[in-house]
Length: 534
Ligand SMILES: CC(=O)SCCNC(=O)CCNC(=O)[C@H](O)C(C)(C)COP(=O)(O)OP(=O)(O)OC[C@H]1O[C@@H](n2cnc3c(N)ncnc32)[C@H](O)[C@@H]1OP(=O)(O)O
Ligand SMILES: CC(=O)C(=O)O
Image (tube, rainbow, N blue to C red; front, side):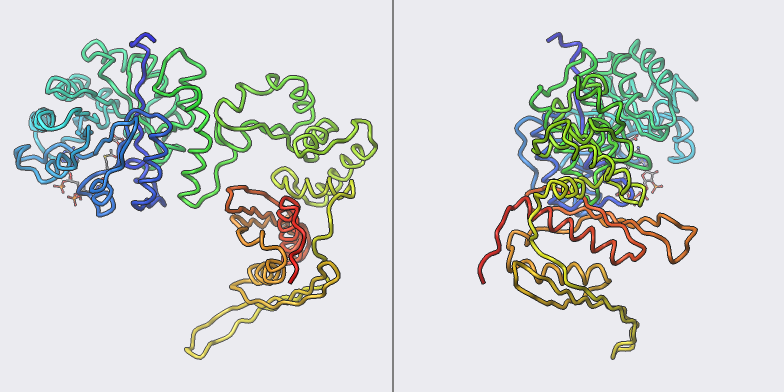
C-alpha cells in the first residue's frame, strides 16, 4: 500500500457526539461503544474531556484496553494569563495519561477578539506553549484548529499562523475544523489545497460539522486535497446538526476511492451492526434511510425496480449490501407487482410456483388492504402472516373470544389526578378458555399486559418480547374523531430480532389489538412452539 494514500480515522462519538442534544452517555455506554469502535478498526478513539464532568473522569479513570485503536483525551489550550505548566485544565488533560491528546484552540481572529477577548498574539502563544508542553508528556499531540475555515476566509494569514504555531510546536496532527459547518465542498478543497503549501497533508486532519448537510462531502473533498486524518462520529452525532458521519464516510472511502484506511473488508462488514448498536444504546429507532446501513438502503419497493433487481441487483444497487453487513429487502405495497411478492416469498422461505393463482390473488389483496389503510411497507411481519394465511399455513396459536378495555380518570386518596386503564381478555387456546385482567398506564399497555399474562405461561418463549415502537397515524383527518387510524408496532426480543406489524380500524384500541395480535402470532410462528402442559 502506498503510504501517501493511507487515511487515518479518528472517532469523536464519545466527545463531540456527547455534545448532541438529547444524548447523555453513561460510563457503560462509553465503554461498550469504545470497544466496538476498536473492533471496527478506527485509528483513534477520542473518549471525552477529562476534568469536564464526572462521567468522563470515571471513564478516563478506568480506561478501556484497545487492541487496535489509540486512546485520545480532549481538552483546550491553556487559558490566557497562565503558564501551560500551571493550568488546571491542561493538567487534567495530561493526567489522563492517554496515548494522545487533542487540544482545541482558536484560529478565527473574530473569535479571539470576541469570545476570548485577548490580544491575537496571546492566542498564538497559548497554542504554541500548550502543544510544546503536552509534547513533552504524551506520545502524540493533536491540535483542533477551531473555526479554521471561517478564520481563513476572514484573515488567512492569522488562521495559518495559528495552525502553523501548533505544527511547529510539535503537533502530530493539525486538524482543520469547519466548526460552524457552513463551508461548502469546493471551498474546503481550495482552502485545504492552499494550506498544504505550508503544512504537509500527512500532518493535516479534517473535522466537519453538518450544518449544510455536507460534512461527509466536505471530509472527502479535504482528503482529495491532501489531509490524511478524518474525524467524525457514528451516525453523525455531534453538536447542533452533527459531525461527518463515519458510518457513511468509511464505506465511501473504502469502496469508492483508492484511499486506504486501517480497516479491511471484514471489518467493514461490522459497520451496520455498529451503527445499530449506537441507536440501541441511545434507545432510539435506527434511521431507515441511513446511507449504506439503513433498513431502506437496499430496500426495493417499485414493481419495476424489483423486477429488474430479481434479474441482477446491480440494476438498482450501488454496492453489494453484504459489503457493509447490510441486506437486501424486497418491500411489498400497492406499488408492487408479482415480482415483489415472489421475491418476498423466497426471502421468507415460502416455495410457490410463479404462476400459482394465489400469487396474483395476494397482489390484489395487498393492493386492496393498502387502499383501506394498511401499510405493508414497514410491516413485514404482518405481510408474512397475510401471505402464510393465504396459503393456510399459520396455526391458531390463540383465538380472541373478546376483550374489554376501560379507562378511568379520578382523584386518588392523596388528592392527585390519575388516569388508569384496565383490560379484560378472553382467549381460547387449544380448547382451553381463559380470562385475564390487567391494568396499565394506558389502554394499549393494559391490553398488551393482559394478553401476555394469558399467553406467557403457555408460550414461555414470549417472555423476552417487548414493544419498542408504537406509531399511530390518522388516515382520514377530515372525519374528526371518527377517523380511521393506523397503528404500527415494532417489537423486539432478546436475540436482537425486530419485527413490525400493522392494524387499521376506526377504533384505535381495535387497530392496536390487531397489530399486537400479529406481533405475538409472528413471534409464536418463529418459535414454532407447542403450548406447554400446565
Ligand atoms: C468546538 C467544540 O466543540 S470544542 C468542545 C466544546 N465542548 C464542551 O464545551 C463540552 C465540555 N465543556 C465543559 O464541561 C465546560 O465548558 C468546561 C469544564 C470545559 C469549562 O467550564 P467553565 O470553566 O465553567 O467555562 P465555560 O464553559 O463557562 O466557558 C469557557 C471558557 O473557556 C474559554 N475558552 C474557550 N476556548 C478556549 C481556548 N481555545 N483556549 C483557552 N480558553 C478558551 C472561554 O473564553 C471561557 O472563559 P471565561 O469563562 O473566562 O469566559
Ligand atoms: C473542535 C471541534 O469540535 C470543532 O471545532 O468543531
